[in-house]
Every structure is written in structure tokens, then in C-alpha cells.
Length: 351
Ligand SMILES: [Zn+2]
Image 1 (cartoon, protein in one colour):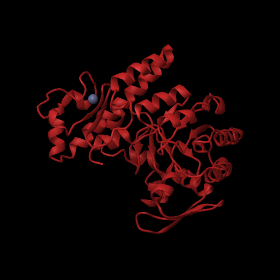
Image 2 (cartoon, helix red, strand yellow):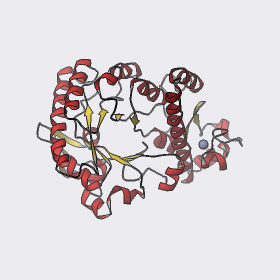
Image 3 (cartoon, rainbow, N blue to C red):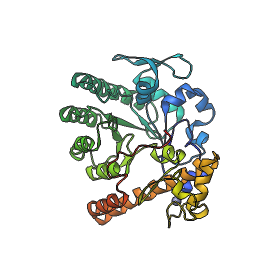
């Protein structure tokens, strides 16, 4: 899922988004809660109308952004209270309110409100956040069941940091609630690839195969491959759009940095053979020029290519699953994307 934070996938129209191969998009409850506000979204016809997008939309609960963006954040078992990072106004978000807001937004999949402990938190703090999140899953479910459960699905979120027993306790509690889908939260917060893979390893036995399993905020190609192998079905990530805006293109041969002077005379597309709009019409040299000249078309064109790349990448994964050779193809893809992607330690230019 490409990320459409403020009810827009930055820099592209819905038509471009669809042509690039996107099927489902994510919108951020926290941002829409603060601006323009859920009642305004409802008056405007909901997130589908605002985004001119008739495909499925998932909204997060806002919890993650509250903890990462808001000011003066205070949490207890009842709710989280914070000050808007935009104008400092006080806001309260409870599990019930998170459901109510997402009903106003009108997404197809809503997420439970959860507490994500910081990456470096002590075990006690992680356990408290996990158990609070589990209790909040139950309260979200009650609030969700009072509405139209056919129109909007509710996903629970597993927490528990890097602790296997806490992850198991969280998964078991969520499965008992019999929700339409389950997410794995609290990863991609600096724990590193190998630790993440370790946390995901038991997922296939912990969460039901018949329901969607969604890994939140993960999108590095090698992380996606490892997570799919562990049984994950869904992802969201800002990489295709954010990196695209920063002149970085994803390709099957690794990342391309278009600000690099080596592209100045290039008449080749970003990725020869790519069927995206950008690669069919623009050379890498032209794209580099547009970035150097700060032209607004440049971020749009590279975003289109990156969205197309991730759509093809995930389509190729689905084909490899169907033909039974995902492990060997994963190794081939990662070798071709090396070294930039194999170590995952590729600092972004311009950020
Ligand atoms: Zn392309």
C-alpha cells in the first residue's frame, strides 16, 4: 500500500496511482484528525471521494503518529492525550474515539488504537504497552461491532517488541477476539533486519492463515521478501513516494540516485524495459535535469516509477509463491539489487 498521509499520495493523481499498479492505499488518521478534521472529511464524502480513489483504503488508528509526532503526549489505560503538532491544541484519542474517527473517514479497513513502545524501551514498558494495546483491541471491537461491520473491517495489532513471549501473548489475545485481520506493529523502529526476521518467524503459527496478516511500516525489498516468507500478506511504506521525491529510484538492479552526475548525458530510462509512464517517456538525464532545476514534475515522475516498481515487485512475489520457487527467486533478486539493498544501510540523499 502506498501511503496517502493527508488523503493524497503525494504528487500523483488517482489515475497515475492506478496506472502505476497500486491497488490499495493507506491514509493516516492522525493527520486527518488534526486537519481537516473527521467531520470535514465526512462532509467531503469520506476519504474515497477526497482521494478520487474507488479502490480499498486502509486507515491507521493514529496511535503511531501520536507517539512520534505529537507534543506533550500522556497515556493511561483510558486514552492518550496530546497536543497537536500543528497548532498545539489539546486532543484526546481513546479506542472508541479512534473507531468513531475512522468511521467518519469511511475507510475499508480500520486499525485498532494501540501503544507502540519506543524501540529502546525496557521489557516492563513493552509489556505494559502490549497489554494495554490488547485491552484497547477489545474496546475497539465493541465500538466497531456497534457500527456497520460489513462496510468496514477492523484489524488488531500485535505488539510486544522483540520479546517472543510477549509477542505470543499478544497474538493469542488478539486471535481470541476473532477480528477480520491482524497486523504486526512495533517493528521497523531501528531493531534491524535480523531481529525483525526473528520476531516474524513464529507469525505463521500465531495468526490465522485464512485472514490477512499485515506488517506495518515495512517496505525495504529485502524486508518484504523475508516477511512474505514468514507469512505476511500486506505492507505499507513511504519508501516509493518519499524516496521518489528525493530523486531516488528503485529498480531490479538496485537503487538509482538521479542527482548523481553520471546520469547527466544518459538517454536511457531509469530502468530499461520498465513499462511505467516515466520510463516510456523520460530519460534519466532529463529526470536529473528536472531535479537539479527544482521542477515540480521531477518528484512526480520518479514517484510514478517507484510505485510501478513496488507493484511489479509484489506481483512477482505472488507469482513466485504460486510456482513454489520464492526462496530461489528471492536470492536472485537480492543479489541483483546488491549492494545497496542487500545491507539495507543506504543513506538517503537530501533527507
Ligand atoms: Zn519505470
